[in-house]
Image (cartoon, rainbow, N blue to C red; front, side):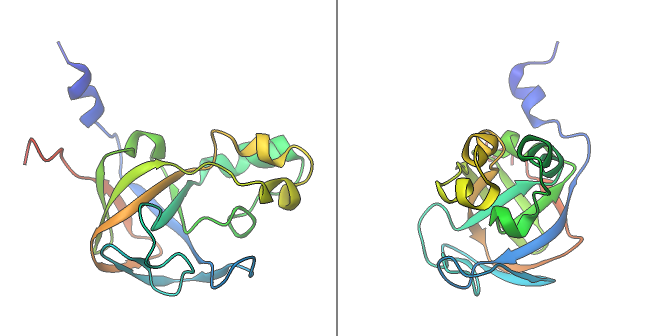
Length: 162
């Protein structure tokens, strides 16, 4: 019989990094890039949040773009939603408090990435509520390294098992 711990260790496939975006300044347009350096305890090079606490990196689940588009009746793109990394193929909420690798970097999920009031302005009336539960994950960087489009996201075993 599998325990809840056993079930929480099982991820059927690796995720895939499909978009990288940097926020060069407050309210500035997102800059889409093919690769970025993830710096331990600091964040992504070139992002305005580089050097800030637990919210060093923000991740969005690719599959939620279609849901959000349906809810706000317009195309919800990564640029509009202002997250750093868009991941396809893995449930990001299952990564809260988990350690995972993307490219050369190792990250740890720190919590949900809740929407800000700006989503109402960007997505239109109801945009804030549409984003609730679909805002993705925040993470901190535990090991520096390059992250590139197409890199897999693989969940690492709990430290108690390593």
